[in-house]
Image (cartoon, rainbow, N blue to C red; front, side):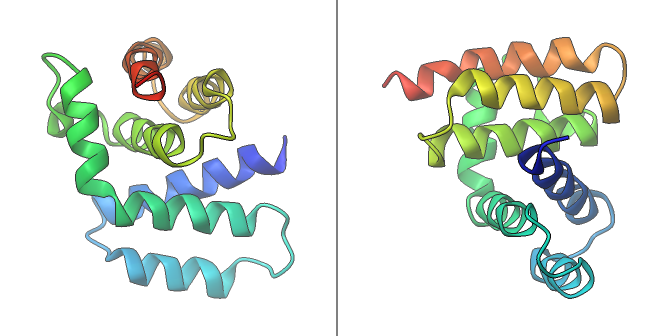
Length: 135
């Protein structure tokens, strides 16, 4: 597994904690920073993704809602919702990462952490987000 994939998975776990365990982003960030081993190649990228999603959550959620027709974020499975948030952050704030890589990573992570149909759902929503890069 690549260090970028590990970072995305760690970020997903942190986002899940903020979303489902009523933990504050700063508390989760501090725990991760303190307890994950120093020098892990993915740690810096994981923290950047997590902090980016936390800082821009309202903007990201509004963007997802505008492309997820007939799907309110609250109705989405928590894992799927946070995978999409992570990918949406990368789409809008990390133009150096090719959008197809972002989508492929999100789909693969959804296959690992969510239901068998989630990868299709995640892919469908993120495919619509390609338009954001083309504006």
